[in-house]
Image (tube, rainbow, N blue to C red):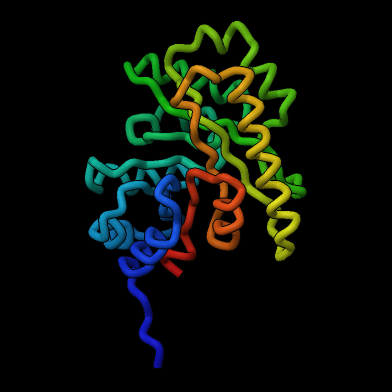
Length: 222
């Protein structure tokens, strides 16, 4: 009978497979603190949560050197509560949300790194900006006056499909958007360097298309 791989084995195997410039974000959705610690003991430090309540339940009791990534849809009324814990918010999908993160970051004396989430999938249920909305945001005087946030790149989720051509096309679209925004607005800012795309079912395609961050849960915990 084939021996089941441990969480540690899976993390180490994936890290050996992915290029050195790609970060692994272990998604802990519906996972216990014990499961997080198993990954932590394997050397993992970057973890992703997609619900504010779950993050607030886990983070205070876990090691302080964990880098928490908020990867889900974020409501403005949850921003204040999660800011003390997050190192990167992947899911800035509206100007209003970015304004709230900026306001609460300034109030708490920190600068929060953020990614702009783009809607690249065919499913209308997924959140995200389009190019016009992102350009209006980045060209606004309100954005230029923000001091509590730093835009570090883009995030996107591909269509849930078995068709690799559709998925690759959407990932390539996000990579092209990254290059366009980098050249137009962030050419002299080395911190604008991240493309967060790729999950358990499609991360090899995402890496091939230029992803710098992959978000894996099922591949680690089953």
